[in-house]
Length: 92
Image 1: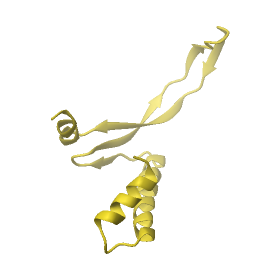
Image 2: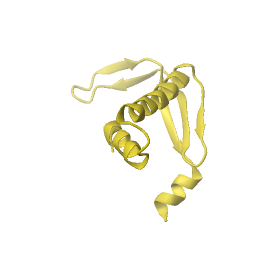
Image 3: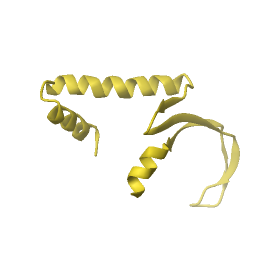
Image 4: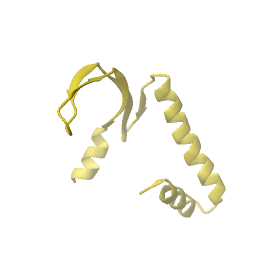
């Protein structure tokens, strides 16, 4: 499912909403999560999961194409950990 599929599904299950309103809702939701992650905040959606930022330390790696050594700088990466209820839904 992609973003436009999600918007369509929200609009279909909520006939009182116009398509543009469903689009605004989804965009605000994703923008809020993105803004919080940029501020290094943790987002917890009970029953769904947790969005967080992890720091990867700088390291030395190898270019797989030619085997040369490459310095990889430290960086922050987004991380999602699934909640227990979501795991149970998937596995049952």
